[in-house]
Length: 168
Image (tube, rainbow, N blue to C red; front, side):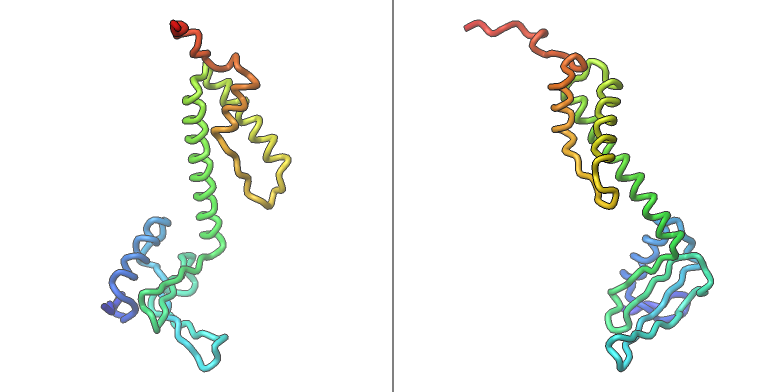
C-alpha cells in the first residue's frame, strides 16, 4: 500500500514504519528526516535521487526508497552518525563479552571472582596484542576460563573437598 509522508507519496506503510523506528532508535528526530526517492535512468550505472522531504543540509541520516520497489529502503549516514552507530555496536559487543565471561567464571565456581576476572582480562589483552589489529578477535571464553582453572587452581573452589568419596 503506497503511503504519503508529509504530503508526498513515497513508500508503503511498513517501509515508513521501519524508517521511523530506525530513526528513533538511532536518536534522530523525525521532524528533520530526509526522505529520498531513487529512480532508474537510461544508463544502468546511474540512478537519480529526488528529495521528497527534509533538507540536504541536515545531519540526520538519509533514507532512500526505490521507486520500482517501495518496500526497499536504504539508509545513508553522515560520517558522524556512522561513528555513533559503530561506538554503540562496540559498547554492546564489550557488554556481551563481559556477560559471557562472567557467566563462564561463575560456572567454574571461583574462590575469588575478581582475581579470576583480572587473570582472564590479562590473557585476553595478551591475545589482542598478538593479533593483527585489523582483524576481529575471537575468544572461546569457556575454554579460556577452563585453562585459567588448570593454570591457577587456587583461584577456584575444589568441589571434591566438599563431597565425601563415594563408597564402593
